[in-house]
Image 1 (cartoon, helix red, strand yellow):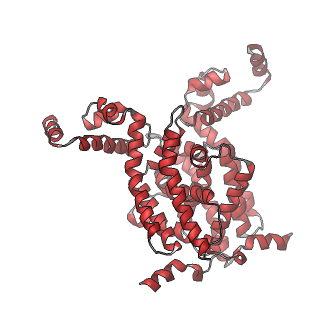
Image 2 (cartoon, chains in turn blue, brown):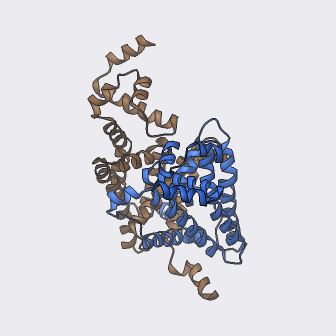
Image 3 (cartoon, rainbow over the protein chains, first blue to last red):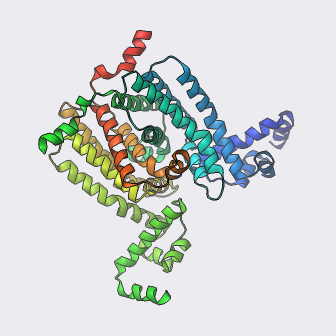
Length: 226
Length: 226
């Protein structure tokens, strides 16, 4: 085991060691259900000295930010590609929801990690992560909504409220693994369940955006009762 | 300060001491942004001996469960009352979303606390809290959905997926206080913002439930392109 690890280490370039640390950090978050992992746990899991974290990332906050960039960076780039296509706003919305749910499916800790890093006091990481992750994501969503309104198919909604709605809804199924287990008797999130959740969210949200005013019957019901 | 505290303590009955511990625990969670608070922090904040936690709640897990019951118990009872009324399914949905958002507004830690207690390994709290909180809530939501379908106004959706959608969406704005600050430049959640969020969620979700099949244009768009 020790020999195999040494051989592996000598054969891989620096970038792989860096990645090893990030992969181990993510795995630890999944195993422990906690994003506040320790450097010594990473060292134990990888067989690498925790001083390497300092070498590659400066400190633990640097490692956590690098993990967020690694996980979310690709998704944001793909979302940009989606928006640049000539697909309809509805299709873009579907691809966006699919993309977020897929990310949370593979990396169920990522929303909590983002909150953890952004909440951290006395540092600049909050502003940095917001600028790199939250703002571009919110801007892309706004573009989809604007296209929908411009095409006359979506009604106008507040993009910021839409951001919290989408992120919270997409995340909760994956955050809620133990709630799924104890509350609903489901041990694992299958590809089918993930697929069903995408469709559920998409159908509600797109119809919620498309719906013409005359479907807002609660208001008229209230008026009838008033 | 010490005298005032002693006077206060001697003047209040047992139930108030118990409540003092719960209130302090909740306040600490808001202040620290972390639900995993320590008994010594509670002792420090209340001026009460941390042994009282053992006396009233058995252990820290017992205190956390009592806090969840205190916060959510009233909301669940009010939801039962709402369901028992003759309001329309749409109105019940609106009252339900309003109730959850109000709870998260006052107790922004409560969803994370519920997850923390349910995720805790090697105990029975997960099953207990699921039975007391998650299952009754999911059942109430299912009743609203069933009434909507029976009345011919809602289309049929999976109540479990609906649960995660509603809970995640309602919670995220309050979980995301620092994201709100760094990502959107908003420091505090005002009553207006809370009210706007309820309306945003309600409009999307009720229209998503009400919408007839011919509004699901993404499918037809895909078909046209295929």
